[in-house]
Picture 1 (cartoon, helix red, strand yellow):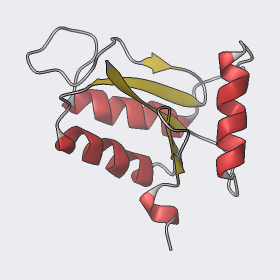
Picture 2 (cartoon, helix red, strand yellow; picture 1 turned 120 degrees about the vertical axis):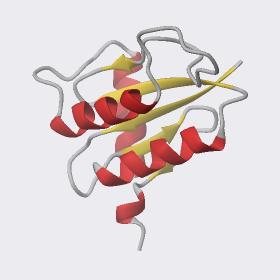
Picture 3 (cartoon, helix red, strand yellow; picture 1 turned 90 degrees about the vertical axis):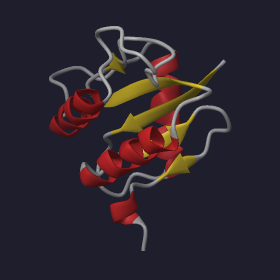
Length: 117
């Protein structure tokens, strides 16, 4: 079983409801067009530099590779035994790039740490 997280690059002022709505549209096959958002590209580059997703590595945190990268989000399927350090890195990079986190297990949306007051 995996633990699935998605980071979303939405406009300033996006709410948890906006994140859930964007995810539902994605699940229904409606996807944003255009280039990958610079925040998504930077998040993916930094995360996979630390935890590669293209080649087999021992103790990989990824249950499914490569990660799903779209114009406005990255879907990460993590193993149940994923180290806390991986989750901390995901949260750190989400905060660095102003991305919102969606926990697919329970639908909880977390604003990046930079937005938490």
